[in-house]
Length: 373
Image (cartoon, rainbow, N blue to C red; front, side, top):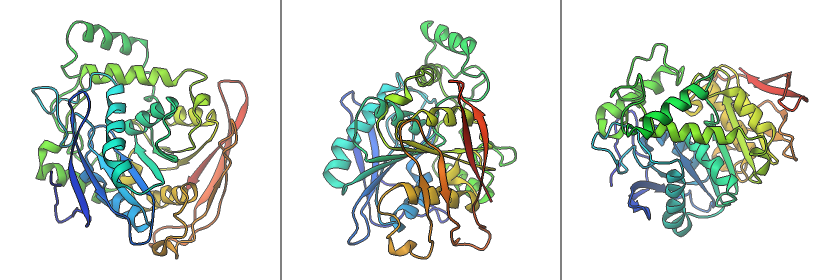
């Protein structure tokens, strides 16, 4: 199965594409790229809701510049993977555990046979929520996970009792396949750039919209009642006080201070209780950090390079001198130190770290660290 290429977003070279089939019959599109000569290790990229492989071509190049092989899938129900409903624009999934089946099938049929170890996961938003569930289940397919704005909770009271009850009643009434109240068939990511909640970068936003204009079948519209119901159930599970402490997987979480799609405070609180976790809040960034302006993306990659082994010695990154150190001991996820780094573009300035004290739900105070440009 081919990838969609446009002049503003060409397919990275040396790609292998195809489809795999899950035990429950879903067909998933995958793509993988070999690492540069003499290098080992694979980063598996897991997208957010409504996204597709093509949106992450720039990220694929960034990872290959760091010496990694890259592998990706389209989740069931989006991209060019199979859709369950007659209307393909409806974002539908029966249960969030179906996404875990997608990951296991991908690992068994693509990653383990064809991608060099060690294996790392890089996941965004909904993909981050799936990775947390996998880590909580004790499945150690990945040495480390880097989660960009993981969907741990939504801002405000959007996942409150009233919303959960309404969705459950609608689903029990057989309305799981309809759009959520207020939803519609407009594709996600093609509306006006003004006041969009995803990114402050107009060029990258236009590029991503152009992908969907080239092939609208890659996109989806508003979520269905079934998707929202199972997503809310997953996020409710994350609220359990002992959920993060039961995860043994080394995890780095990166949140955006201007995120209005997922809850940044929920990410910070969750990360604080991880046994082997770290987190960083990037001040000024919106939800899609990897689709953001270079000054925000530079901070993301600085943290990634410090957390994921094997990136600092990549020849293509030799001039960047990027170092970030984290404490990862039990119940401690404070960012310790960030050195100044040499930016690739003149507009990037030295990274500045600030902190303030925040009271956690256990009554103890901790420092919240954040970055500014």
